[in-house]
Picture 1 (tube, rainbow, N blue to C red):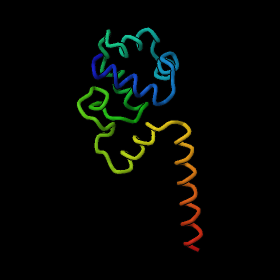
Picture 2 (picture 1 turned 180 degrees about the vertical axis):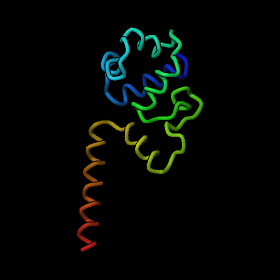
Picture 3 (picture 1 turned 120 degrees about the vertical axis):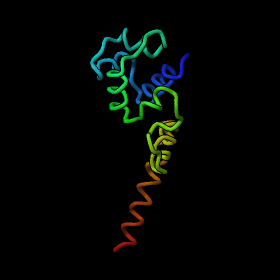
Picture 4 (picture 1 turned 90 degrees about the vertical axis):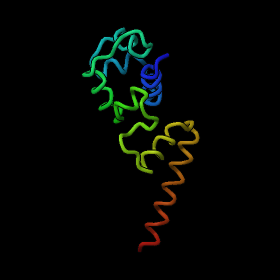
Length: 110
């Protein structure tokens, strides 16, 4: 599978969307989108731009030219990307930990 097709599938699954849901969100036919994700159809730059805006990632990432989804990856960007790779159970634990830390700092600031 071409890198672009792999990245499209990864991004869609990361957002927990079906192909039909994603196609609807960006306003294209589901069969057209399936062709992009399966690497059978050439994607116009306008669709690439729509997908990049929707996912908030760089075109270089979607095209497989770089491994980080953002043009200039900050430590926060890398942390967010790592967060998306965790299971829902682990995400809940992480959110609980962050909320606990936030409450602790608010208490100490008073």
